[in-house]
Image (tube, rainbow, N blue to C red):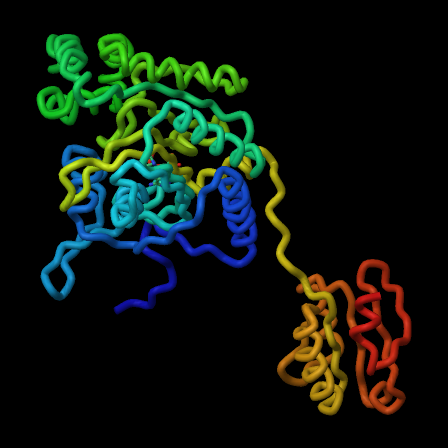
Length: 417
Ligand code: HAM
C-alpha cells in the first residue's frame, strides 16, 4: 500500500489555525439558538439505512445516488448520515414529539454525500442545524427563519438572499402534479435523461433540475402553489405576513421545492453571491417525516447551514479569521539547570492559566528566540546559571523590546500585573 498523506477526495483535514474560526461559528450557533430555546443534541454518525430511505424518500437524489451505505459484520445495512433531520427525529421519536409536544434541538457535525467534489461541495461536510419538532404553526416556521438570519448576521454573513415557497400538504399535490405534467409532457424529449424519468415518477424533482436544456421549460412552469387548497395557501400567507411584519427581506420563489421529499408547507433556501455555483449557504422548511416502525409521521420545522460555505462567505466578505492563541510567556533556558527550572516553572504557570512555552531539550539562545518569534510569544524570560544564582531574570516584552528584571519566585505575579 502506498504512503497515505492526503485524505480521500472531497473530505478534508481542518488544522488548528482554521479550527478557531469553526469554533467561533459553532459557539455563536450555541448562543443564538439557546436564545430561542434550542438544546444541543448529538446523534450517531451512522444510522440504519432505512431511517434515511424512509425519512428522506426513496426518490430523492440523496437516497438514490449519494449515500455511503455499507453492511456491518452482522449483515445490517448502515448509512453515513447524509443530513441531520432524519437521525435527530429518530432520536426524538422516543419522546413525546409524536403526541404533539414541542421539542427544540440543534446539532453540529459532519454529514456525508457521495457527490462530485467541487468548490463548496464536499463528500464530508459539516452542518449546523436546528429542528423544532412536535407542533405545527406558521409562527414557528417564521421564528425558525428568524433564528437562522440572526445567526448568520452574528457570524458576519450578511447580504444573503432568502427565498421561500410552500410545498402544501400531500393532499394538495395531485392537481398541481397534473398541471406540471401537462406543462412538461410536450417538451420532455428536449429535456435531460433524469427529467424524462422524473416526469412520471416524481414531477416535482424536475423543478430542481439545473441542466440548461431543462431550465427554459422550468421557468415557464405553472405556479403549483396557486393550485393548492385554501388552508395551505392561508398557512403560507401567514408565514409571509409574519416575516414582513418583522422586516425580514425575502422573495417568494414558486419553483423552490428543495431536494428532500419530507417537506410540507414552508420551504426556504438562503444563497449568497460571495460563493460560486454552490451558492446555497442554508436551507430548510417544515416537514412530515416518516420513521420506520411508526404509522404516523413526526412534524417539525428546521434548517441546516453548511459550515464550509459559511466560512467561504466570511472570507469573501473580508471577515478576519479568528486569532490562534499565542504564548503569554516563552521561557528561554541557557544550560541544563535553567532548562530543568524553566520546565517545572512552565508546568506551574499552566496550572495558573498562563500559556507558557518551553523547549523539551537544550537549544541555543538564537534558536529559542526564533521559536519565540515564530510562536508570537508576548514575552520571553531569559534564565541561565547567573539568573538562577541571583534569583532574578530579564523579562522582555516582545512588542517593543522593553526589558525589566523580575524575581524568579514571582513570575506569576509579574505576569498578572
Ligand atoms: P440541504 O439543503 O440538503 O438540507 O443542506 C443544507 C446545507 O448544507 C446546504 O444549504 C449547504 O450549505 C450544505 N451542503 C449540502 N451538501 C453539501 C456538500 N456536499 N458540501 C458542502 N456543503 C453542503 C438539509 O440537509 C436538511 N436536512 C435541512 C433541514 C433541516 N430541513 C429541515 N430541517
